[in-house]
Length: 475
Image (cartoon, rainbow, N blue to C red; front, side):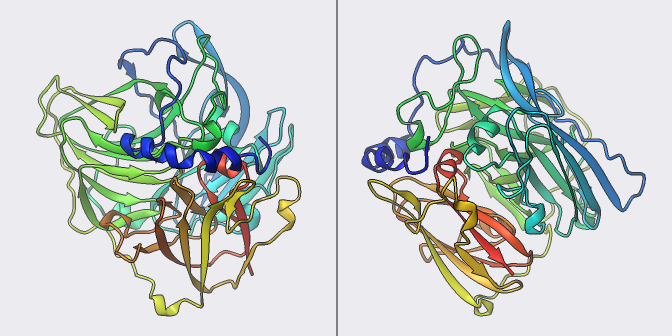
């Protein structure tokens, strides 16, 4: 799809589509009858492996990633062509500590160019891995940077200009976990793969032969690519066996376009302890958790009240995502502390400038402030220039008829308000992606502490690929 082609159907159909979207708690439904017969929820949830750190120096973390073609079996007896890092689909978990020097050698074994964007990791512009740092087929990219941010769940994914959607959809994504001394001193679940489990949530659409379908339905450009099969950690219909203990889940909305409204089937509450870029000051008790593409959240679910044999599902609106099957009781010395960390609030009075951005569109254009990223010459245009070290308020509005997740590279921000009202408690921490609903204005504040050229865009990947993306330079 070429730049600008999104706009005509996007805005002609937006009003009718929004009503259906609200009714479902998300965008409108996918085409019926696509793909093989749905499997039962009996597929064991895999735990993404930790990437090997090849350095013996504790101050360094050295990794290798290879973007490669693969073949996956999501359905018995059916093979699916996929992409992955160091494997067939998705990639290993990179894990580093605050203060460590991280070096990553990325090899591109695909037959097309790609990039690797460190989503949520604060790095200079030349290390960001956006469309500026393309890796040609058969070549590699070496970069190095120091981790200087709190513990949290970040991720990495392909981000080439105009083809981010299909590359991520086929599997080019993985987690990047950061640790620090604050985490070390908390008595929360933190035994990776045991009571600290990542959940990379994605939806995909398949043909009857098991192949992935992409942009094959009429409204895929309007809503973004959404599927009728739910996947977690690369497996359809997964189940995770848990003991009746407290479990920490690092949830990543790795879908191209779908917005989730996570809840448990028994209507029990859970505690959110972290948002995109680290811990909240205190746990926030919730019964539902809205997450748009690109957002991350860490939650603790206490299964201690469940009995052996109980099955509790993780759902979103009309969708069943996965099952938790309770095995039995076990010792649990972890706790949910009343205080997690301290977050210094940025004073609005310190802002040197306020910028306004609006998701816009008309018959021929869909973009931000009526501007689009040109897929041929767009990298030559700097849309905004920010003074390095300045604090700014960015106001983001939406008048397109459907919601958009707004992602800024190179900074962590705080949400000041939504339509003039304080944000919910679970949006009171550090973030890099925020969902902006239709007819809503969200104000954010950030200090720009990284130099270079960065993107800001809608994190609905099909919207991004169609031009709903601009860039700024901090200097």
